[in-house]
Amino acid sequence: SDVAFPIFAFVSALGGMGWKILDVAEALGLDFSKAPVLARCRLSFERPLLVEQTYTVNARVDALERKPSRTYGSADHMHLTAELCAAAPHSAARLHIIFPGS
Image (cartoon, rainbow, N blue to C red; front, side, top):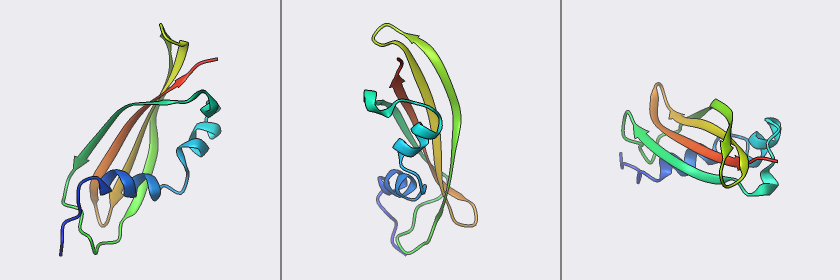
């Protein structure tokens, strides 16, 4: 079977979460209207992603912490992981998103 281009680990994981980042932010009480910043995205691969394979998405918030910020006064740092899995994990997209504080 054909191997998918690595960016699909990101696109498929976020698209398959079932929630938009906006929904996750609002559920956590974060203000999405203040334009959050994607500070980091790390992709890791346990196995190649295959084009014809069906994957499930396991997503979780690994950490949420408020930190002082020179730019915003304070900022909420959310660390989100979304894994693509078949029988076992194939890839993970780890996002660090900064939400300006109020």
